[in-house]
Image 1 (spheres, helix red, strand yellow):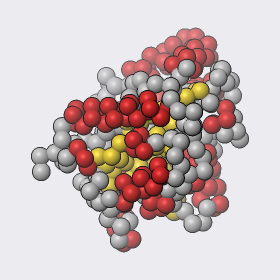
Image 2: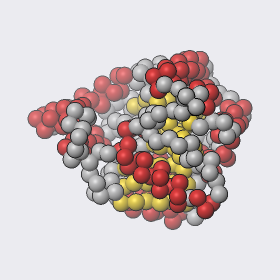
Image 3: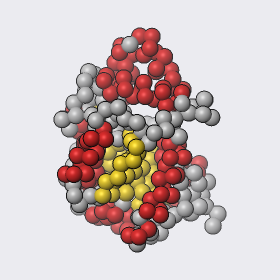
Image 4: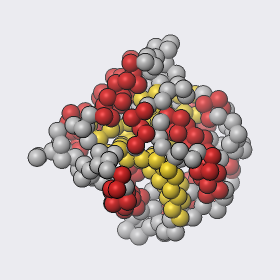
Length: 310
């Protein structure tokens, strides 16, 4: 099997996603649907690596539970807030869900290596359940997989059919960036992000992917889970979910409080990461600006994000 070069695969996926987003987003029926459930996700695993995400982690878990997920595997990277307690509360309140939370004590940003370890662990740990074709979805706490197209009947059917087809080895999701209408100062964990952050991309620029892989497909993800390390299959083994109306709503800059945590934690993680001194330059720069000028920098960054989503 020769496989598909990643550059060719990325271009192919991005072209399909952009065309689908352009057509769907222009329709008056396009909006995030919170009442769509995909039964095929019942055996899939939602994998996350989190740090100090107590303002959003409850919404993320509940959102994906409602979407259909029943398996959750979370790496908690030394959170200093209530993240672990919120995950435990979610587990207690959803007895039909399998929720694992592992304390990740390594501060450095070694996400690709950590995700490879998670894939290997889950492949062995879940082997007794006799579901070798199980999907692994890699998301961040600020990413919400959401059906947004107008046809809430045929769209979900087509997505479920794609998940159930053993010929499909990778699912490709694309970001739709979301922002508030104005700069929010403080966390609002008790309010739905889809109520407080209603400004959503009207054009997909740039196209950013996140992936899900079959556990038995012999693949691992790259840093950031934006693509796999290699794709030993033909192009049609990858499914672009935007074609069916499924996107990853992304809420990266939610409040000044959240951005302060994100900038400080991001800089600390890269400072503790050996061999990646040339990576994460924007976090190092943001932290330098924040150290010199305080919250005014964070407000400017959030306003730029808001403007980019208009």
